[in-house]
Length: 161
Image (cartoon, rainbow, N blue to C red; front, side, top):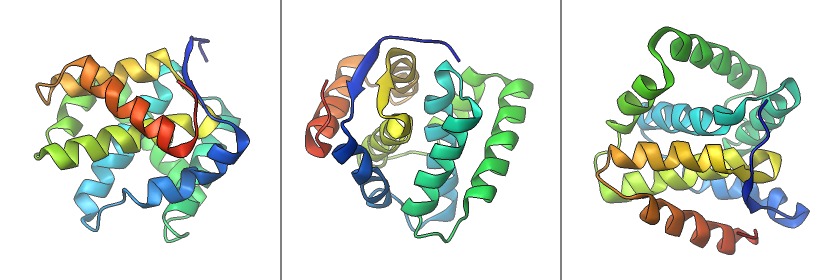
């Protein structure tokens, strides 16, 4: 895991809100849910994920889905995503995933979801924000738009930018 500068830090009270904040962004559409999960994982793993971070991420996502998807399934999904990234490359996976979000609302929700998932360890790091900015280029959005979404999200859940 690489150490990078933090962009957003969450106090314990805000961290406790993550599952419900993530749950509010979950779509009914299974295909879109899969794309959201991939984007969230790609952003969260931008600076590497150790076993404890993977477990925390799986637990938060399990809670967010109301335990309809269990932590073990998420951990297995992470292994599959790692294999896909190894085979195709992170940039290719981001481009393919970004294509699944076709409206501005879906795109904004995707950025929010991925930012929240990335904050599952209590911090959004600059490498994770970089992934969100990269995916936004596929939406023809600038990094400033992503940063505004992240800052508004952090303020809403009680984090500090």
